Length: 355
Image: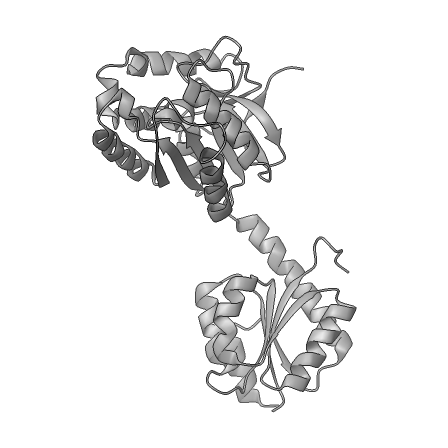
């Protein structure tokens, strides 16, 4: 039976209040589940969206919408969610219709308590296992200025996207001290589009980004919205005051995130000491393309010259696998940050330094 931390979340849809109450009680007491019972089927989809259940148990004959119509809606919106349909009318036609609509189980009333508990536990467990196997990671890269994350982890982010992970970029200023803010905004949008990333572009004052609010609040808002598994941000070992401020704010705002790593910026000091080196073979050219989106900077910043970017990645590979690497300082690590194999790089797993 699941423990308190891993309680299954169940939505019961039954227009008969007595039956709904009975099922809710049985599943709470005997399956130790968190249960929401819905007696108005018109509310089902909105409640499910908010409650995020592991499994739905629904009657077939209900006013407004049938259980089979609801099942079709669920299959469209939540294809991996287990759904059990039930009816008091034993009918082969009902069973065939339910199976054709891809119900995971078809039950006839009255339903024995032990059978209900067993089915809910089994399907909820199977559903969680499948979702865990197919769940995309959400990766959040945080930078003080446009082009910061592309320089630091452009190759890693490209590898994440190639693996089907969701990539989100949060840029906290528009870099007005380093160029025209409007130009840099367009460049950020072009880079995000090339990468296939979602972009949050804020407008804090360049060179004066505060350590506390509003910086912390902005990062917390984005973290709450996208729920990242992994966060990449600036290192504390950096000469730029904005980079230091963003690092400190990120430490506070991402305290619930499983893995937080720091990347190298051109202004990083000799105290930047990475402990992981992620091969980006197959994604180095993509990184250069991302950097090239920032034309206002590549024309005036020597450190963005392609040969230097390649040389830096080549240098770090002496500590990791492959021929090109991006270095990371690991602050917190409870998630898998291994990179997937690509068509070019057959093994781009994160390498650890020797103890």
